[in-house]
Structure formats: structure tokens, C-alpha cells
Amino acid sequence: MSSTFNPSPEVPPEIENAAQSGELVVFVGAGISRLVKCPSWDGFANRVLEQLVPAGVDYYELSQIKRIADPKRKLSIAKIVAQKKKIKIDYKSIFHVPLESENVYSYLNSFNSSFVTTNYEKYLSPDSRKTHPEEDWRFYKREQLLRVNLDKNGNVVHIHGCMDDPDTMVITTKDYLDHYSSKEVQDFLRYLFEKKTVLFLGYGLDEIEVLEYILRRGGITTNPGKERIRRYILQGFFNAEMALYELLRDYYLDSFATELIGFPKDYKDYGHQVEILISWAKKLKFKDIALADEAAAMEEEIRG
Image 1 (cartoon, helix red, strand yellow):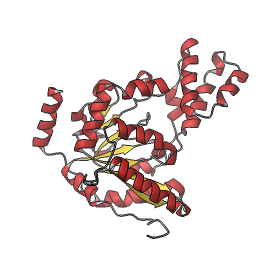
Image 2 (image 1 turned 120 degrees about the horizontal axis):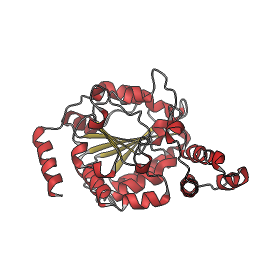
Image 3 (image 1 turned 180 degrees about the vertical axis):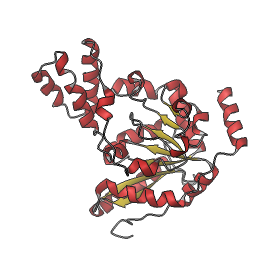
């Protein structure tokens, strides 16, 4: 085993094959949006809290809430305060950042796959759908978490809602519990992991809890050693963290039949994955799902 990470990991053959058969789903997390300077979870929580001040929350009360270490707990409290004081949080202003002409989404949007994301913002905008009405390919309501919406290349499914409709946004601890206990979400994830090949991007060590929650709710709890690998996580590590990577690689493989692909953070931190995505985008050939498979999925959806 090498003591350093390959700076240019090859595209797994399963991902190449899935792209060609229309079965690849790219699952995008908060680590990708942070590459364009969107706030971290903690930054998001603090920006929400700051919007409470003009409505009557004093700075002492704000400082007490900010001392809470868990961002989701801070967001839960902020949402309760906002509801009590009838404050409307401007989420769009929090996630609005100026994008450079070339950024990680420039390359990611060239992937003609379907996408699932836990992000609220809308920088995922596939090139293949730019001329189509957004309502035809962007879905963020719980009732839109349908299997058929995974079967069209260029579709983007916001599994945690979208900033365009704050009522759909899964933010607080209660939101998460309610959302992932619903039949719609569990059926959606089960179909995703049973029928698709999934590439996870933007789920670093800070997002492990969210990632594991998604995998478990999708019905993946163990790998008997015979299951074909159809889930991949591209994640950055420092070369000095090789031992940690090896432990996590075995853990994800044994627990979720998911392969962890490591890349080095020593030179460009998480930004190094942009170079990898550029390389992979040149190698992947995307085709739509076969019509027969699409019809079968729609029939299965109707049967429930």
C-alpha cells in the first residue's frame, strides 16, 4: 500500500458503465458548495442568528446561542425564535455568492447524469437542461421525491429542500427526524441505492454523520462480501492521514458496500477534487436510461 494518495485517481469502471447506461447519480454535499465560498454549517447557523437581531433579539442572547457547538442545534433554536417573533429568514442572501467564470460547478454541470443534493442553493444547473424550464428538471418538494425523477439525465433533486421555498428546507433536528421517517424519503433512497450507481461528492469528515444517516435510511446496513459495489465516495485526506483513510475505507465497505476513493489535500486542500472532476468529465460518456427501463420504473412507481 502506498504511503501517499494518488493525485489522479482513475474513474472506477462501474461509474463509467453507469454513465453509459444512464444509471449514474451524482450525490452532492455541502463540501462542494464550500468550494465556491458558500458558508459552512456553522457559518450558516451564525448568519441565520444574525438576522434575528434587528427583530429584537439582543446581542447577549445571540452570544449565548452562538456558544452552542452543534450547528444543527443552533439552527433549531434560531428557527424556534424566528417563529415566535414572526421573523422571516432570508435564506437566499445567505447562500448568494458571486461565482468565478470557472468553478467546481462549471465542470460538475457538464456531467449529463441525474443529481441528488443535500444543498439548498441552486448552483447545480446541468448544461443539458439549460434551455428547459426549471420546473421540468429541478425538484425539491417531498412529494417530488419520486423514482422516475432519478431516471432522466439532467434532473436535480434537492432531498433537503431548496432556498426558493423555505418551508421545504430540512434544517433543524426535528426536520431531519420527520423527513427521514417519511415513506416518500425512505422509498426514494431505497430505489436510489438498489437501482443506481451513486457517486458521493462533497462529503468530507465533517459530513460523515449526514452521509451515514442517508445510507442507513436507504436500507444499507451491511455488506455480506458478495454485493457488487455501486456506491463511491470521493473524499480528501492529508497524506499523513493514510491510516485513518484505510480504516474508513474498510468501515464503509463492510457497513455500506461503499467504496471510499481518497485524494490528497496536501497541495490544494479540498479544491484538488476539481482537477479530478475535470479529468473524469473528459472520460465519462453519458447516455439516457433505456426506454424500457424508464417505463418499468414508472410502472413500479404507480404500483407504489
